[in-house]
Length: 206
Length: 206
Image (tube, rainbow over all chains, first blue to last red; front, side, top):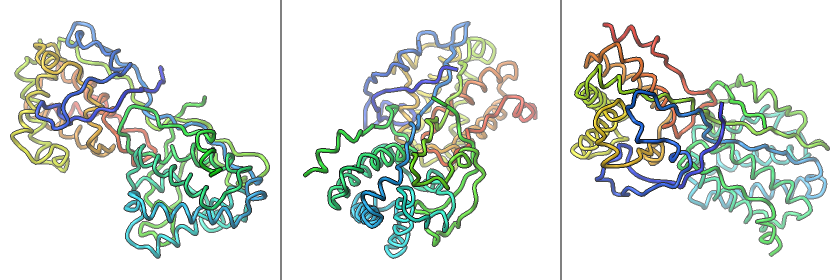
């Protein structure tokens, strides 16, 4: 089976392809689309489109205990709280519901999780067991662009809390890769944007 | 790279995993989740989660001209119209917007497409070129369960218009496989349900 990822520019039109669409009908540059020979529709021999994947979740490397040793558990918790403060005042707020008290209670649990993953006390798994992150996010629509904003706010939070640069990369490569697994609403053929630490490091030094 | 598809039971909880969630916290049976050893969080050695795919789009075999030769172009158009009549009166109606006149104009274009794919006149590609079906559906949220209803209504439409059984399989295997490529909102790890012709054939004979 030919497993490969399509990489097309996004195209917005209406589902039925009507000429009356507001967004018009723009040509799409897409290798896979080019592979479908529309002149062969309805011939004697069937057109066979090979299997393919939609979205590939790249490898995720979790942090080691070095992060908590260097940054400290309190700094990790502060980072998670600051990130969520930014999220609560962002266009992503609706994902978190109307109950701000409930939200902050849940943020504490998320802080437990991040602290534990980085080598802190095992509070999260004691309380909750397996995190099941993708499943927990299924009820909420998370598009590629929502992840990008979430990551932008992470950079801002890392900077605001002055997260130690020595371990910021180890932490960042985890959240950057893991966040791709939360995308559950595709709006483009393009694979999710990758943001290596080298692309954000200069912002943390400001 | 280890490309495989997770197959878990669906789990609804809140994004932050709070104990205050309405839907509670149910255990999930999931091979992949089991592979993450949560007792190893924050050790000296990093946990590495291998890359994986979310959704695999299976092979799509298009119909041949045999379908139009046996069923006739008018029967194919009638089928598309009947399917959309059912869709318009179904929970999927919001996908098609408020303008019923515009809807029926767009259905004619869809009928052109299906007729051409099955060996009828090349009206669709003359008017519109490449169908770009997945791209055209991106603006609309299409979940796994929406596809299942869409297929149920297809079976009903095939039955209502008495689509010739000799070519129903060839047509069905195309729409059944192709429809998976329209899913753009994941709400479960489970791969999309496959509905072979053998599972629906008895409904067409009624």
